[in-house]
Image: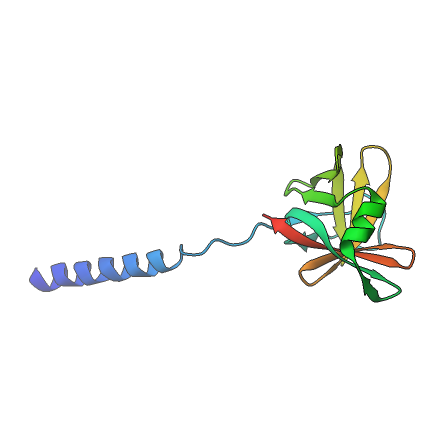
Length: 143
């Protein structure tokens, strides 16, 4: 009986150690969203950049320009919050607007409640929005 009891104690202890090692770090939030627009792929894309994004850099003709000057010209920084459920919230100064977002590959499309559509491209840890010869670079400020 003693060997059996020792075996159970050792087995139980090993099981506890294995289980406690698996719960340490949380996985990042991900969402699978299919595009609202017709596309060639019907499968959803995984997007791990849920959170709040702000413009942190600007390039004009691929040359870095002063972010503050561009933000002043635009009327303030654009803040985008992408939620796990596919909804979004956008703010520029005192104006705000809701909507939805979807991803198709590296392209993120934002459908605003006023009917406008914005298209951004994910590049590593950055979202990029092109406006003619100007590129606005958004970086995550909050999860």
